[in-house]
Length: 208
Image (cartoon, rainbow, N blue to C red):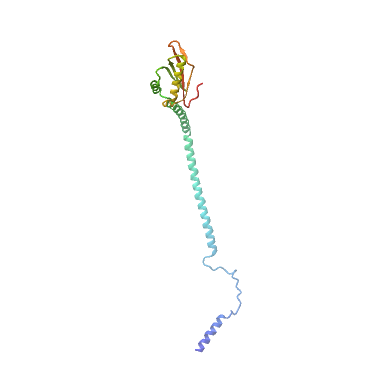
């Protein structure tokens, strides 16, 4: 038993003993004995990156060429239909000009009062001592020519009162000014006082 232990201890001592001669090998100069060399992976990776870049730029160039082709096709279509388009635009502008004129006339006609309704209102509110001789609808307002019974001072009072009545009439909302258009004068043919009123329409220039 002791002999076995002694043999094991001697074997361990021999394993731990340094080599009997120095190691003069230069590992940098020794040939590479790897099955697959490191340079292969480096070169392979570089080639893969290069191919990927070439593929990317080739795809982008193909896309750019397609866009250029589409732009050229669209430009040809534009050039082909440009004359007809310009004519259409010119016609549309003429239509807009005519439409503006029609709308202006329509707005003007709608803004004008209805003369028949106005005459009915004036006839129903006319005082007994005043007669309506003429009604003239002008661009800026309404002219009323009246005959008033009575002496000059009395007839003038009747005319003034009637003008105030018209000014207070809630149905005459289209007018904003009520005034004498001329001084009362006696008409020798009827022996009555002739008076003229002018009712100015709203949103119209003042009477010159």
